[in-house]
Length: 316
Image (cartoon, rainbow, N blue to C red; front, side, top):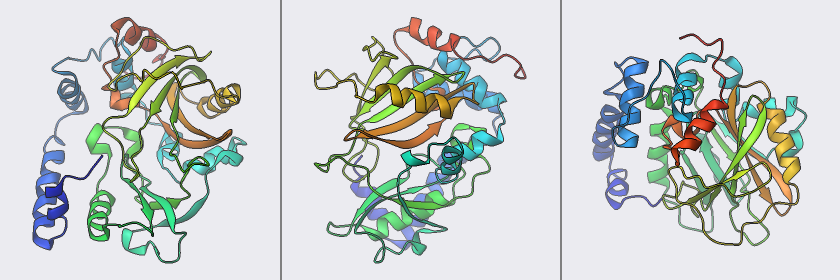
């Protein structure tokens, strides 16, 4: 995702960055007074071309995800949403060996010791989604732009952007960690295991999701596979990848086992891994894939995936 030149210009001037962030905050916060259900209907319609949610009798995948968003309040989910605290949970599950190396955790962008950290590292906020960048001392790095961008996100409560309760009480921090890449310096594919009641039912494989700068790419692809790594005729927001170079990993069953260990306490979650040169790395645990605005096609799969999510016992 390249940075728009105007945004970069605005972020280099004290007055314009303040004005820009006031406008940015207004656009994000103007619907904060909506009830959770009102916000759900607005956000879903905004992302799906005007479609509505049935939150009284949810059946599709998106409807069930929104139902979980509005009714589940789980302290373990909150811990596992935090991109640093989740590491403790992974260790408690006996999977500490798949954790990536962390160089440091900081309270603010200004605290990050760029000169004393390794010459290349991945930096991201622990309390939100998509606020990340790759730092490389040997390449140009727009320090002023990223300082202002990270300072903006450090002041934001991601809960208000999607009404995901598990984000509401997170403490903002910045984590710097080793860049995961293969022996040729290529960033890996993102294996997103969709787990229902502690069982892997399918894989959403993102190809080209991370740009060279470490941000999310707008033109990434997504293929969907079943437990046997058979390609399924399913599409979400991203286009399918049509190349023939995607093969089943040798340690596929090990990845499934790890995903099921980590997802066991939850009704539904997505467990993300990277698989680089035969080694599995933990990515994150996500509880509301796509924010519940996925528009799964064909529709029969939206209902089938919805059937896999149990909402029994949750408040109506």
